[in-house]
Length: 418
Image (cartoon, rainbow, N blue to C red; front, top):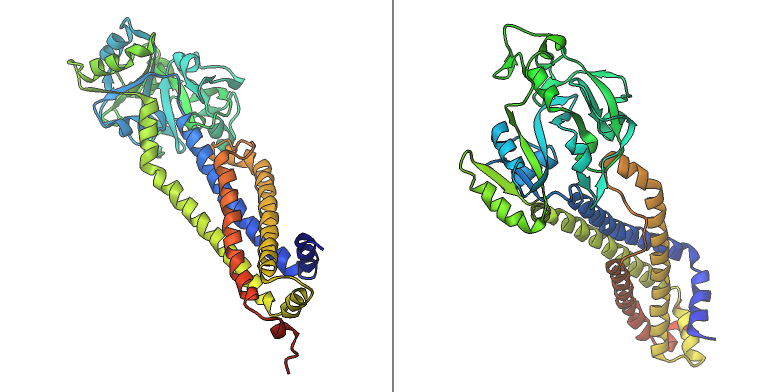
């Protein structure tokens, strides 16, 4: 009878305790692989927030701050960029397209962004994906608004609904532009980026709601929505703008030229490299999660060790009989290690199955709530290495009870204890 058959028959008589051990290992493996999966998909989603954009230009500030408020709608600009400067840079021979951005207002906790139709034409995410309208159309009139998917879902808006924008980032009655309501004309398909959490209006719309405002408050003379349309709604300044160049070889030269712009202090960043640099500064969080998962796995392996050690006393006669019929001491060690290996392999297989089950069930929930698309794909080489490390670690753990059984004599198991 081979060691494998003996191990399987022995496990059958201890199936309850071993099943619980397998389940414990499976949970540990699921957590370890799940954290690795989530951190990789989150990193990919983070780095894919914006693509095919060569430069982002704003008032002089740090690269991270410029990236955060222009792409992630987090924080505020140190200053604005004059419209004349924007037009001058946009007219440069090297520039293929630009997307002006105006920030500063909000709607019920969501940021409002003023821009132009070029935003829908040129903005790219996840390498080469463009924005698409799920329902309705792009804004055409001054008081049109296009909502990100999360805004529409969270606030239960549909095309044709009226919304009121608020001055600043905190909604308050005294800061509402309630005399100039906007109409929802379109809802953008889910992107998994900050676009989903943004209310998009035209630059003219941003100017219209601020015509009768001065220094952050309403002026004494207020104008209604129709009266404002008679004014020139060309902006005097914008928050930032994105730049696409005819040739990417010109990126660094154009960046240096903008950074040395004489008319006003500007900063130009390359979004891809700035995103990667910013991710490195926050990557310690993912490492902590991975370490915590490792400790959970270690706890699972120690639990397995405890279970096997606790059953050795019950198996003393079994091991002694095996020795009596010709099994050598190293066969006993191999038997214990093989049983440990079977338990861990079963736990790994069960854990991988649990991982894919959770991915299938949780994928739409995570995408809807957090904007991260968890791809249901095969394990990558790193995850296979993780599984191999778990198995090797389990074999090492299995040697401990194996040598404990090895040291026991035949008489120790055959003698009747009174």
